[in-house]
Length: 316
Image (cartoon, rainbow, N blue to C red):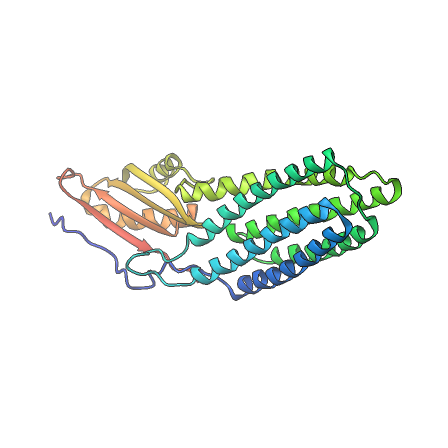
């Protein structure tokens, strides 16, 4: 029997360059411009009014601006083709961007809580009028940016990270508006740092979720809907001619881009090619695994040789 290695042609469309749309790039860039511009307005408003809620929201908007700039850079770098050193191109860049976004959210929450503690120890006067005007403007800007970011394709870790930052700003703006109204009618200044802390705690849940998802991808964990055991059992039950499945590894290069490697043993060695093709088709149709490397464990001389077959599914 011929045990030489056979491979499908790797030249036909075997590209790992991500499908990055011009729309995603444009909306992230516009969101960055709007967020950065209004961040400056909030800094001025916070200083003039003496409001921690506004200053905290301005600090958050600063991290938003950085997050959006990083998201834009991720899309730009992500379009670069694979090379000899980076065989998957720059697909992971957007996951790194999402991870950094989550870390900055945690950092800003710590800063807000510290500043709130200082304000509660030494209350200061807050000008409710200017604070309310700036907070309402901030709410309108953040509502537009959030709506704009979440239109259409918003499944990238990258886009989700930027949107979570803006969601935090929305909460911050609402908190500042409530604080301004309370201060205007009651002159109770502690409401300003108290609402700042409440808003920051609400942000933590989203930040934790984003951090966990980004870190899971960076650690090459299996997607939520796929596990090696699930793949193994499904192939054994649904692919004719497969008697054993082993060494299954499933991971994501980036959000929504799933890869897998595995070994299969056919009923007879003569069925190897048909079995491999069936396995590839099943992985794509049932698990949406776009790139699979399938090694055949031979029934004869299995300890000495295996057939590796790789195939890249085409996307329209």
